[in-house]
Length: 639
Image 1: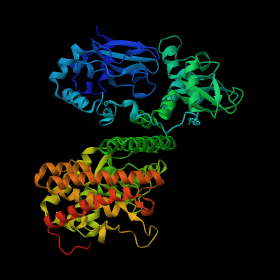
Image 2: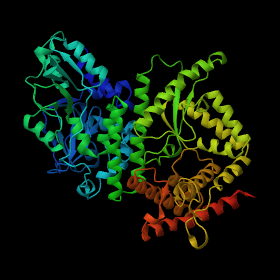
Image 3: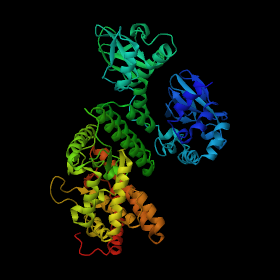
Image 4: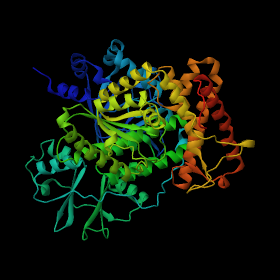
């Protein structure tokens, strides 16, 4: 006789790492040993410094908050599919954090004695655990290295600066999903699923009379207490607790704790005698107080419209400010913010796809290029993106392209709404020149490589700094192979690429004075991007490509790899790595200070220390350009 419970456990676990690396027999065997644990809200799973249990945990439903004991600061939230409590079992150490149910939660407890042999014989599971240890996080694939933020000795200090004041009004969702008292539960569940919400308001005569949440469906319907054909009136929580719409963050937290509820209904005057204007959930409060990458990532994935994503991106900027204020290493900051930027872009694409009138005819890839492709887009700078779609017969090409142009227009508009400016040069997937079939992209990039004028060099260089944000990675890989194949069969291309890297103007003149813009909108401003950042970025690209290294896009990481490959130039390359991070950090600070891209710097606003730090990088810029000129024998350059 089959064990249906273990089958359900296996069906759940197979969707999440490291269990997705197991074959079906291994997973079935392990699932037989899993114990299901139910935790009420605010109950402890394990405490800080407690000896490790004989099992680790996977969240099936609900959420687990990880924090330092006695601290109100939540360091991480584990929700559906997240693994926690595994590292101490393998490292033979006590728990470093307290794990507490943030809401009513169902856990799968997995015995370490049954799991460990599978990890030893399965290389993919072993790799997962190694990366997990290296990044000090339960799931290294959720946000790269996020756990390093919590692995130091001063965790409290790192998150002590909260940019969001407790007494400011809380932001809430105004997109109310409602029903009437006679609506059937099945209809309600479908409606909640469609709109990706955790609650639905029950109204009578346009006034709130009750609320139904995920918790109600679990406790009252899934348990069989009420049939799925029951009405909203029989299962809703009533009377509801209402508050005024200008509720503050502190008030909302206290209100939920006081009444032990997870959703607040906000009305015009704070009573049930006025229409509802919004619903506030625990998750909304988590995002407001969190300033935590894991919390922000989950908020991004749950966003169902561009407006909601735009609000979440304000939290990302607050997170960035906090990291810079606390002098978190920029390499780590870049990885985290880049992950959040990629997640935001991916969610924009998901939303745009959900709004399409018809299915797309073939598979496609969305490429994020430029600074986002290099993992260096910290501020909300302009977009650079492209679409590659599968090849189709010639007679269907334009019709197919029009489908993807429509999608590209929707996505670039969504990216603009959430804070990414349109590209001034129109290098975006809404432009037919940047929306092509795989065959077309191969042909045009081959043309650029074999006919390397200044414009062709600029266009081709973009395709060495891209990131697959969404879709079929195989399409991008095939294009990448084609580009490298043509480049390797035409070595002169690298000379032209080096020439392009030397065309950006020098950052300084005689006596190391800053060279500023002579006319135009930014007259007397210093162009940090064109005169300092781009020479460093362009040099890294041509040097790393000359070594046939195509797996590293980030500028600082390219120089670190070059330092390994060329020990005789190690000092210069490490100086370039440092300079790239210093310049990016400087630009980010300026952008946050002036609420712009940080590209153009008003020198009279800088203090002496800031000017000195900038000038230190100029020597490195000139040295790397000199190396490029000599190595690739670039002559008669326009400097």
